[in-house]
Length: 452
Image 1: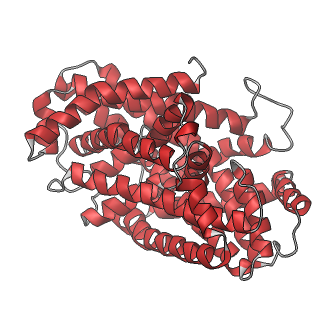
Image 2: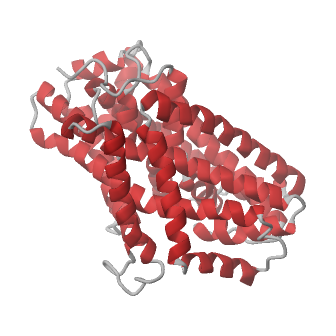
């Protein structure tokens, strides 16, 4: 039988888990990607489809991943090994844990580099670097940062140290303490930014851009985008939710807790859009996609608006906090495994992981400048790692989690761990995790690798 308590400790309250899991889910992608793809794919119509996908795919798989974590009470690798043995199925199912830990490690290596951009922009904004910028100047500022391996190295190192300090302190003194401070601050800063957008931006136009329903823009591709966003936004398939679930109290309701996390993550994504797009559109700028929106367009907007120096700085602090809470969650599974299996102290395990991820991050960092001519499958190292994790490893991990929970665990084991009071609701979840979620994730995967 798997252990009844994690050797690493547990969250002191259900709220701590909710904040931690929401912190894991809310990252750089939430702040720009969801609002942008919503605006470009039917606005409110897309949001409705997205919410449907969250309920049909994201929530069922999150419940399954938390359930596996709490039942195993170990790192994802050892949890899946124990559960495979308990259920009498092939030990090969432990690959779910390996996929999650390896995926988290790869993501951490390049995520730290990108998070370093946000850190550097806190100081660029605070020093008045956005004041008087024109489009060419903003692009030159961003391109200049990417072209400087020394600057990128400094910020990459600082961010990795920030992550290591939190993770090394353990579940309660490190992870829990960090999220109980950072997540409320993040929510407050988001609301402050929305208030600023209402006063200084074009709030009506920004609201219409993201939420006005336009069903003519709702193509089959938009539906697949909504499915993919619903899955990826919740940090599923990388071991983070599983390890956080292993620290959850035995008497906490997994479905109710997962529902709160999903709701908070979705709310943050929508509120982030209500903060960003009124500011961009109020400055007469076009909302761009990807890093360009955050690091080129927004600095222009802040440079033109009253109070832009202060609120630009607040925004990039917010962005850095979101990156920080996500990064500590994706570092935790590997650290827990090193402690359990290799017998390292937590500080030593964190140091080993941080140095290894930092080293791989150097290749991602240099691919933006010195090694820009070297490619893997016609992609730079950073882009390749992003593609490999987001389009192949995460969907694979999520698919296998749904299949294991729905088809390899006995119904009795699953029912006992979830302890859902309503047989009808349990039956609905069981149907979704067995049939709907695996097929939907498979469609997202096939689209991502351009097979459909």
